[in-house]
Length: 59
Image (tube, one colour):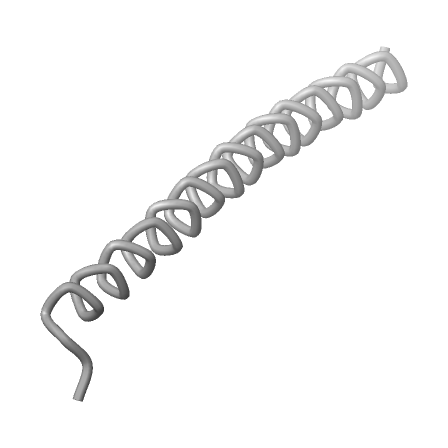
């Protein structure tokens, strides 16, 4: 059976790994949020351009 020190060391290592994983996940979420913002902006911009085009055709 591992000693208390060995168990604590294993816990510390697992916490470091979990912390790194959490930071990586946060970075991925930031990138996804940025992509979503860009996609929404492109969709809105494209929709406005299309509506302007239709308006010009009607005139």
